[in-house]
Length: 301
Image (tube, rainbow, N blue to C red; front, side, top):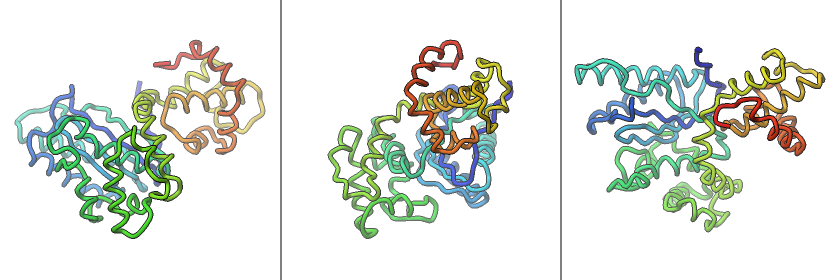
């Protein structure tokens, strides 16, 4: 079965994770990491996406990207293909360097941006790297330099209150905190109640990694099979009881088994964000789904 295209809209924020084929190393040395960043920079200029942070480990890559008009699939195809061609030529080999299907977690920019930057920049710390947070091949040092030329640091730093100097100080303090410490931070350190939102993200990071395994299109397909309706009926504006029920069940399952926001779900099902929220708060529907989940047959459920 052909893979379904990823959701695309201008301004979508993705946490991209690319792993080496069979978890093998994709970077042999510092020169290969530098080469990969140069390729990203080339495609950033070509396609106009924003790069909020990155971390290049030996066998995998983390990127936090906001796309513009060009879809993520086109951007990543270019980056991965060029690096693979250069790597294979250098090592006189052929075949895949990266896993064929990279992970792309669609995230809410307003809620999760800073939490993701913390998560990605702390990758070397969790891996026990000697350099820790000062690891050379992450964008943490770019933030410290307040350099907006390659990594788009301006918007993330603007989420901290104060002058740019104060924002940088608060960013540095923020990077010292881990999940258990977030609750100790003062709310006035951030704008728009960012503390609670960051805490929510850090508390659900592992869950988000699991959620990405279930494609919302698969969920919609399975729900339609279960209720005996056509797939395109899920985007119809109708009061037919069976279709309304199927749409609401789809809302619950997509929310449970993917990282999509209410707005994303609404776009997929031709519903308003209010209608999505109403469906999610329907207690009787939750009970019905618990009873029928095994019959619908969602992978991993």
